Image (tube, rainbow, N blue to C red; front, side, top):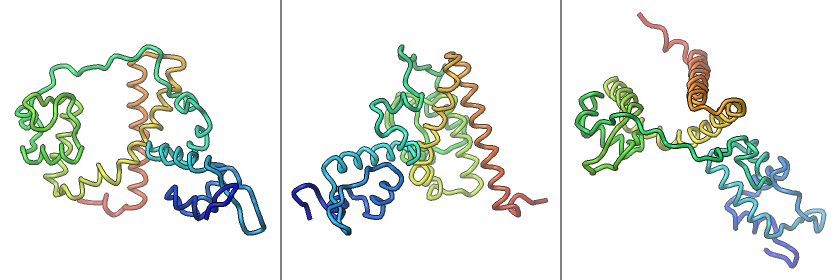
Length: 228
């Protein structure tokens, strides 16, 4: 029910799709300001809450955690607050040398044509040029490395039903990791803006990430790593 000076929490929940429990949690965490109390058991919320919750939803969809959102929510330049604003001069996109066509890609990776198109449909491969069904489809070195990895997984018995989760359940994790990596690169760019240093930072980030992931796997599934 909406009152003269605002709406009740139930109405705010209905309009934003955010549960009343989540609204109260956001207030406790400082993401939303405390509402106006009209009695001991009732509070009202104005229209600004609808806009603010919408902004929180947008930032979450970009892969930001609530802790990071709390830092950037009131900043007109969120990227600047995180130190990941783009450089003043837009960087030129580096085009990989000699990208290969579908036939060469299949030959080099060991994927079948059907497996390749399944991977394209799931978003597991994102070619540098063209789209599925186009004669101009081209694959660069990173596509090649990933294609070989997919071929190994498929040959080992990992099916596309499981691989599909990389592009579905794991996508929010990938977006969040991308923002985290960008913060690392931004910290380095304060003293060195060269492409080489940015690439080295990304590679070092990946090594630390893989190390921590392997450690966690060994702790949680120690028997799986034992073998002849």
